[in-house]
Length: 422
Image (cartoon, rainbow, N blue to C red; front, side):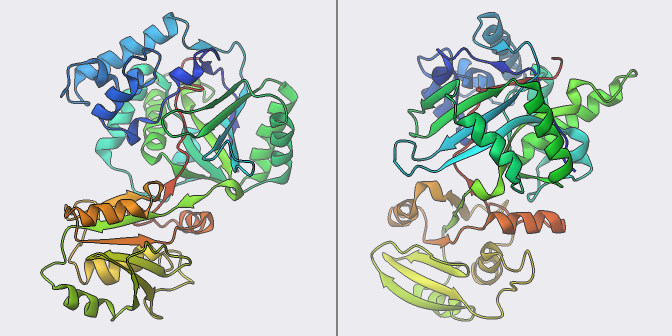
C-alpha cells in the first residue's frame, strides 16, 4: 500500500504567486526560459534554469550554474518570496486547460510527500526508462538545494472517500487562483491544515491505494529517491523518519487525467519513392487517402499520416497487434515495428536523428507545417494511450516505448517546495 506524508511546504505569498510560479524545467530550453523570465525577478526559472542569469551560451550543466541555483534559491527565501509553513500540511492543486469555459475540465491532485523506499521497492510504479545523465543532473539539483523544488506528477486508482474529501475542501475559496499568461491554463491551490483530515487522507492511501504510478517526471522521481538513499547511507544515526526519506508529488485520481497524443515526424523515406513507400505500408495497414484537410485518428489502431500534401488514414491489420498483451496493444509499438523499423530503418527511437516527436498539445497542424516546410518528409499521428494502458504496463513490470505519453497541463513549479531538512 502507498505511503504519503504531510510536510512543511515552502510557498510564495499569494501576491506574487502568479509571477513566481513557472513552467517546469524540462519544457523550456535555456533561451526560452531566459525570454520567459525576462523582467521578472520572481520567476522560479531563476532557480530551476539558473543558467538564464549567466552569459548566454553557458552550459546548463556547468558548476557555475549549480552555484547560481543555490544563490538564487537562498535569495528567494531571504527576500520572503518563499516562506515555510510552520506545521506539516497537505495541499490540493487543481489544473484546467480551459478554465474560462463553462464546462471546463479540472483535475484535482493531492500534494504530499511520497516515500522513497516505495520507489525503490516498486510500490511507486514507472512505465518509462530513465537516463543516467538526466538522473544525475536532477540529483545535483536536489543535493545543492537540499529540496524538491519541482513536484512529480503521480496517478492513483480513484477512491470515492478521497474524492469526497477533496470535493469538500475545494468547495471553498482557493488560496491561489490564477490563469498563466504563457498558455492560458488555470491553476488553483488549497491548504489542508485540519489534522484529522490529514490523518484520514494518509490512512486512506495506506489502506485503499495499492500503488501509485508516475505519470510525468520519471527522472525527478529517480533523482529524489536516489538522493534519499544517499543521505540514508551517509547518516550513521538514520532512523527512517528523516525528511530526506520523502519527496514531493502531486497525486491525481486516474479517472480525472487525460493523456494526449504523442506523434512522430521523419526526415526521409529511407531511399523509397512515395509510391514504393505507400505500397510497403499495405503489408500491415489498410491505407486510404483522405485529402488535404487534417485527419485525426478516432480510435485505437487507427493512425493518420501526412505525406506530400495529403493526409491518409491507416488502419492496422489483424495480426499486427495483440490486444491481450499490455505492450502488443500499443499503437506506438505497432508503428515502430511495422513502419519505423521495418520500412524506414529506424531501429532506436532514443538515438536516431532522422526522427523527432511532437506532443499533441501542438496540434496536427504542427505535423503538417514541419513536412510542408521541407524539414521532414512524413508525419504520423497516433490515437492517445489510455490511463488504463499505462497502469497495465506498469503493473506488468514492462516499459513503454519512448515518447508514448504526453500529459497536459504540466505541473506549475513554485506553488510549494519540499525542503529535505524541514
